[in-house]
Length: 119
Image (cartoon, rainbow, N blue to C red; front, side, top):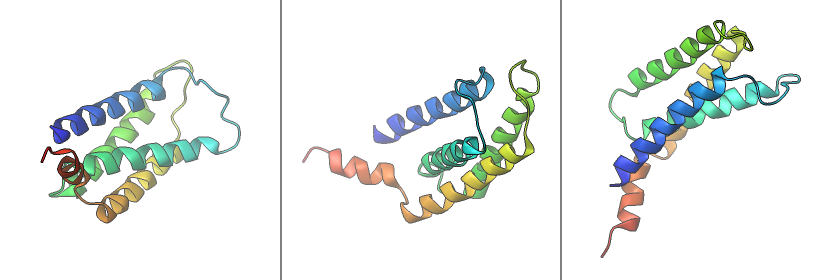
């Protein structure tokens, strides 16, 4: 039950990343504050999915990095966004942060499942 919920929220995160990256910007990105959003967003995305995909996480990491790169390329097809190599690199850095965070808290859905299991 917890794994199914975890997976559903994970897919909502993927959809949110895609939609928020392709719609017109909702805030004026002054300076490099958008890099914090990229880093933290991809760290959370990687961490979240790494809780479900434990074996061969490098494949998951590669998929999330490619997802971020594809979004950057898609931004070049929109009238209000521009692709940015530094955003793609920041996304990849977020994946690395999420990977290490998942190593510190492995199998969180199973742990939560034990907490909420009726006795």
